[in-house]
Image (cartoon, rainbow, N blue to C red):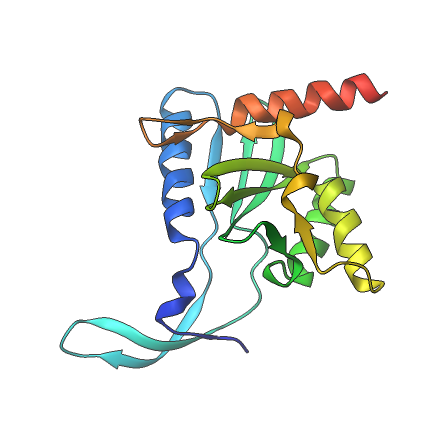
Length: 180
């Protein structure tokens, strides 16, 4: 079982932005997307602060978010990196398996990736993620380079702390339609 310490909250700024966006989308009647909590069992508590100092994950989670956008089922995970690439090690096999199964059932699976170095947010479709995942398993590069992220799938970050990933998802669906 994995253990969680204070560094276990990596990615929380991006997740807060996505949570705010999802709240906004639900209020506007555009989508219902929910954060999936990860079950933990506390091992050590800080009695003075009333916080958990050490805990372990009860089981492997699936992805960060599940939802429905106007009849389209979606699942995605939020990742962030300070590097010029997204390390494959940041993505877990159980997440790939869940996204693959979700994709096979007709849902849309993807990552939302924040490149902190460039302050840019991207939608990475499951098909692209899977190519790099399989490549890494077969001895190819162990990260997804910044240049592999399609500039047509950049996510607009608005002042209201909103990531307009719906517009980017529409762009992705349009691109998929053009390929057929």
